[in-house]
Length: 573
Image 1 (cartoon, helix red, strand yellow):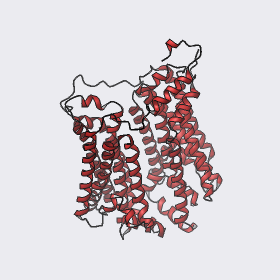
Image 2 (cartoon, rainbow, N blue to C red):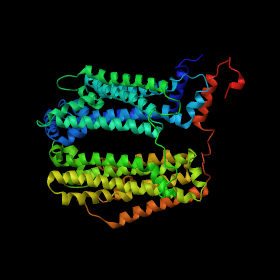
Image 3 (cartoon, helix red, strand yellow):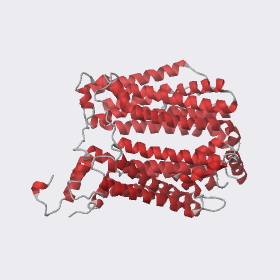
Image 4 (cartoon, rainbow, N blue to C red):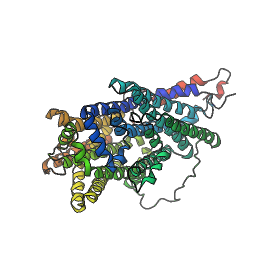
């Protein structure tokens, strides 16, 4: 007889095999960013006097405390923990959330766990395998961080504290994601619950950190103690008063408690169902859902609203931080020169705002790419066939997603410009001036962002089996050129690869119509090529080298391993 954990070993190997590229790439990426931040801070602030000046100005800026947290010292390590400690913990949490949901609720929703359960698999084995994969990712991030930072001549003790705080935060959210997978009936709902928990933890930590700086709002500082991100901060990595090791037990205990709750809920609920009640739709569709455009909007509205909320939140804080950015940039000539080059301006404030409008455009381009690639997801998931079985043609179906991507990109850029302009204008008393300037600066990046959406549409129509890899690789290439090319003085031929090089550098720059017209024309041409390719190719094309599908093959291999010798052949699936 099989126990509740039977087959955990095979399912764990299956999870690692499916994530053989995701976990190493994400773990190395998070650690590499932390190491690059540490190296850059040592270069930008080589002396104790400059680091003290930065700590003084940053401590007086509530927007920076809101974004990055508290400073626990003036050493290079303390600045590294302040600048990226909270955000590295957020990245580790997002990684573990996606891993756990992918191997639990997503596989259950797709019917894979039902197939796997026909073998010798216990009820708790899939959840255990998912948690082991997430735990491995968190431990890998912690170990790599602890090994890499001392290479940059940072203290071992502080490196270990920062690494363990980031890894412990990832483990805590792995447990919360496991609970969310039992509550929600869909993978999207489970991810939404877990990401909402992460967003709430960030807000609690941010409000508590801002409140701890003021006398009238000191009572709010306790909010940081109820947030897993606050626990990572209170470990005081590289702190001048020493590390606080006992705090690391709190996220571990919280994660263990969440895992215990998840196992209890998994044993109690029905397979394929979530504990939260389903919200049945209307018996008849509304008149709004009469065409593919309305359907595409209905399917992607929730994701877009989440992006808009994140943009409003983030760029309001970045706009508020612009008021004191001049004093902070004056503490490092190298950092000031970087912002002036990336913003293509001679004034610090305009360069700062222009640089963050570029960041908003890169994020909007990432959203546009993901929205267009939903076409490929629906195609491979057999969700496109019911739509195309009606009077809807392929071009109208694809255009519905493209229109949502275009409109969503414009909405995101408008949200960034409005929130940054409003927050900066309120602090400087010039809302009527800053609001239209920053709104125009954000919307001026729209044609360049749409070029990347056009690239995604083109590869979806011409090379559907490589659409995801090619589209995201181009987004990453453009982001690297846009962020590092100006400061490193890369040649014009390389810089011109990025469409953002041709965008107006606002606020403070001049607007030329010709580059914007060319960018719009290129975006339209790429989209037309993609639609033409979609009309000519087979629907559901899986590529010339497809051999039955990787996940299908892995499941078959697992079922062969999981077969018991005493089972009758007629009972085997």
